[in-house]
Length: 176
Image 1 (cartoon, rainbow, N blue to C red):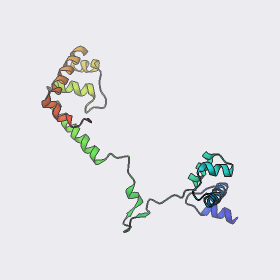
Image 2: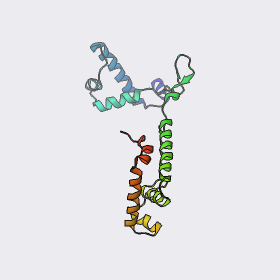
Image 3: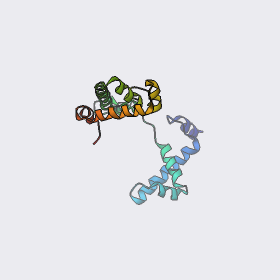
Image 4: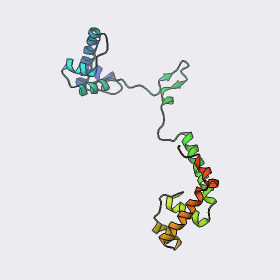
């Protein structure tokens, strides 16, 4: 009864009693093997001694780890916590945001140097400032011209953009 109560109350995350017993047995054998070999035993060696598959030993070792609080103080001053050092992967880095903003602005400037029709064709074809890109056919319907004419306008606009006076604005954003 005491062992069950300790198993139920001792940890932040409750682990079933049979698993606590396995963890305790694993720890006991691990300490014995450490004494015998003078080093920490590998999960494979523990599995052999306990007559248990290596993957199960790894799972038990993983379960045995105690959770750590995000509020755990870090450093000598204890003015920062562990949570302060964990990266938030849901937001982009300031460098990436600045790069995207710069690329967007440079793209707008370069497109503004083209005729309104050429700029609109490129925006539609490549989905610039739009949710999706469009086919030659779709762009042709928008301008009431054939898809071949749209292809020609697109090719002319891209030729203009390749000129150093325009392409130099965007060259710094290429990974070379």
